[in-house]
Amino acid sequence: MPRSSVSAAYWLGFRHSLPFLLVIIPFGLLFGVAASEAGFNLTEVMGFSVLVIAGASQFAAVQLMVDNAPVVMVLATSLAVNLRMAMYSASLAPHLGAALTWQKALAAYFMVDQTYALAIQEYERRPSRTLPEKIAYYAGVCTPVCPQWYAMTLVGATVGKAIPPQFALDFAVPITFLAMLAPMLRSLAHVAAATVSVAMALLLAFLPGGVGLLIAAAAAMFTGAQVELWQQRRRL
Amino acid sequence: MKYSAAEIWLVIVGLGIGTFLLRFSFLGMIGNCPLPEWALRYLRYTPVAVLPGLVAPLVIWPAATGGAFDVPRFLAALATVGIGIVTRNNLAGIVGGLAVLYLALFSLV
Image 1: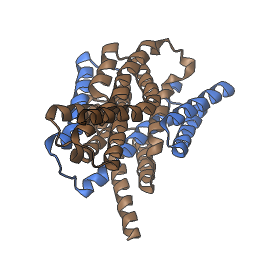
Image 2 (image 1 turned 45 degrees about the vertical axis):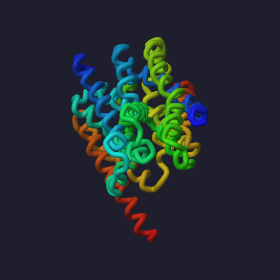
Image 3 (image 1 turned 90 degrees about the vertical axis):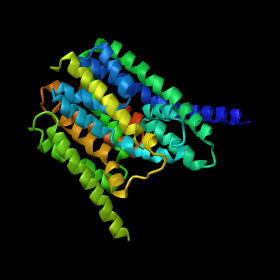
């Protein structure tokens, strides 16, 4: 009995994550194209997608390196993009915290926006699920999504150079960022944070590699948190 | 891009290890220790704090035009954000943004 419920959980996760292929395939392709256009060789491009496996921060690192930002600033800014993963980790901990260390390490490695979002929805919808079922569901969610990220990066990095400049692929990176960003603008606080980020980044663009962006990001985080507090107080 | 191979790998491996530690943090260390409310409040805004500032200069001063403001690229950016907000769908934003970019590029040139 337990074996079949575990395998059912795996295939449920697998089916739930299939629609995300529509997002992962173009993102992976674009990352491969953008990184190889920036001058990274194939091993380096694949190094990003296999070792980091976090699209937005990979794009951020590549963009900052195109601008020749110092290594420290590239790392600081790209890691700041991934700070939200700590929040995902905290929110999954009550559900997967009792798993074996190697299982938690794998779950951490494959933790991306999509796998997190599906897993937490399922865990909250069916709290009675056992730990093996929860792990199986998570593995099912990762199976279609994560290998595609590597494969599509490889395709993008291989064919990217063959695409002529008239296709303005330089702009694929901003468009990808904006497309990831727009659905996150779901409250006044998010919009306020984004607005401060844009205004400060443009005002401080004269500062060398990445410094202006870090200041802008800190100010924007502060703005978002304060607007949220202010809204909470008004509602009380 | 002016980096030695060692510097490039420092970024890749450093970002990989750092990102893994962020993902493993709460899951690996403790079973069940909730983050304080104030920390969550800041973490919630990290993506919308970093990404808009990263992308704004690319939209206003695109490298491909030597930093000159470019109407097709600006329209494409607006369309991507607008479609993304309305549809809440990443892919719709990308497809719509690219469609506007190509329409504007090939009709204005």
